[in-house]
Image (tube, rainbow, N blue to C red; front, side):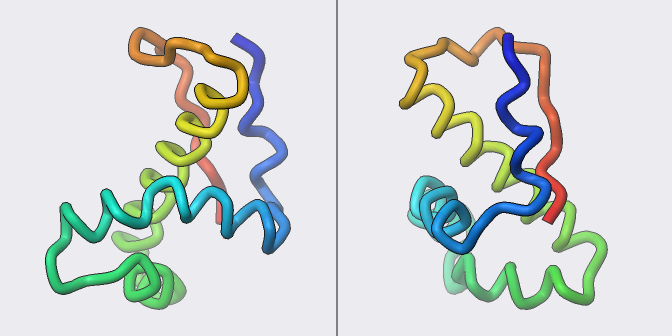
Length: 84
């Protein structure tokens, strides 16, 4: 599989908004009473939250790639972290 996550090391505001839209509802469903924006704010000073945000953004990037390329990523072993 082609590494399409490499360009996420410095995503534009538009790319971030697109990626966040792919995970916002799921994140907030998994973390009741909390928003993705809360996580982003905490990630600026918490290593644990930075890792959690990175993991969610990796999911978003995988969803975007799947939607664009139609790839079946369920059996993929290649996970490249987003570095935000």
